[in-house]
Image 1 (cartoon, rainbow, N blue to C red):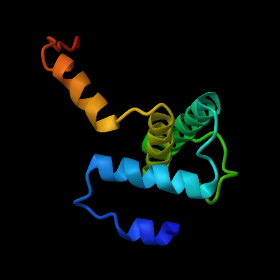
Image 2: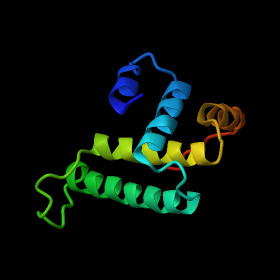
Image 3: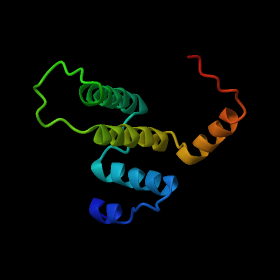
Image 4: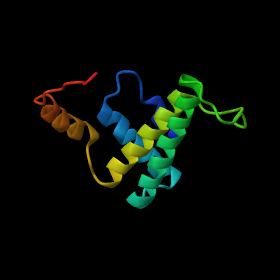
Length: 116
């Protein structure tokens, strides 16, 4: 199946598991399925840096360069971070939904106090 057909199967009612399965197949099609997790982690750090730069430029007006006339949006950078994070999960055979649920069960029992 090609990427466009796979993409057409996703919609606003797709589950996190659906998205993770989609990305697993797309990453395979793109030729990155056997990429070492260390390289994916470096890519994740790079993508988080790009997100931080977009937030700095657009959200807080701290742009330090004007060389990026066609810079990506904050939303696109968030998507890139998510794609790489899910790819890492797939490489490590981690179900992101299950991990999220387990962690939130722990977080729900914590006392969350924000110091102002």
